[in-house]
Length: 438
Image (cartoon, rainbow, N blue to C red):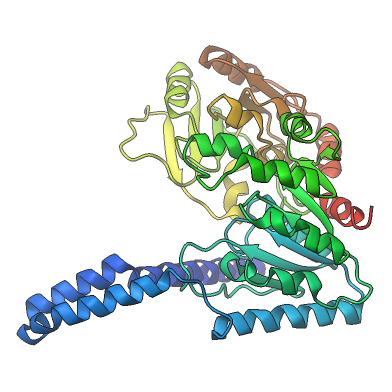
């Protein structure tokens, strides 16, 4: 085995071990585990049974304390405050651009992820210093271990307490950009503060949050907050054309423009070669929640195309699915192993539920599919309908027909190479940095 392969496997093993440690920590500190442990110990020991009421009261007091964010005199608050001040000092010395990204997503873990994470990774490669604010579900979750030069990661509960200091920190002559990546209530009240301190402020409309709220996935959404952001920010950038239209309607006098998703310039391994197998394999990777993935339609597609084998990679699939025999549910896979599967595919698919939620989407996976040289068949999604070698349809029958047609398509690699070259995260990062002061 080559040394590079050994190093790659070691790196993946270390990453998986890190995630397992994170999950183990969450289990050990969860309320259900702690309470179950008290009950089991009480059953085994008369002395602990006597102490059970006291121990239970102490546990519930601790759990109530968890619901309070760290205060200004806490060690984690001071640690993050110092980290931000050090980053600002480093930016002044190096005269680097500074980006504060209020993401609303999970922390950066060293793997490719969603739009805010990939924007941050690309900005770091462009030499920017980035303060990345991420969401955590519990105030006592540990800070992420992942580190990168020029990056500070800060949980949102601390970020919201430090907004005044973040806005007014001494950055000398450094250009500065504040990206609001989701319309969290209260953040709109600080836009003018940042603008007065010399920050360019952008609202990055990366999803149709109103439609997410309707399916119970963004209960915090308030249309008045989003309208205020579009009106107050220096500009609004949208991931899809339908969202451009929607945001223009909220504030016709504001600057609103399209900035779609992308893919890393080095997404493909240097030696990648696609060798489709026979019979043809149709592939998918990504989220499998039935809020997005149309399982009923997908099963009908698989049943209607018995000549194909379907490989489905991802997490959050519904429990108890009755899948046709030509469907393999492979579970989640590391992003840097996807090419092993995609190399054997003939076609890639995006069977998302049609509707307003999907209308606002520009799925990152389509750029990855096209990087692999795969033709794509998808249910209707306005943003991607004119992408090369992409067919969008509005019925199961049309989907099946499109799969058959896609299997005999001869892909022009130069066309795809040009499309990818025009849509890299590196170019998107340069565009973001170009907004500073514009």
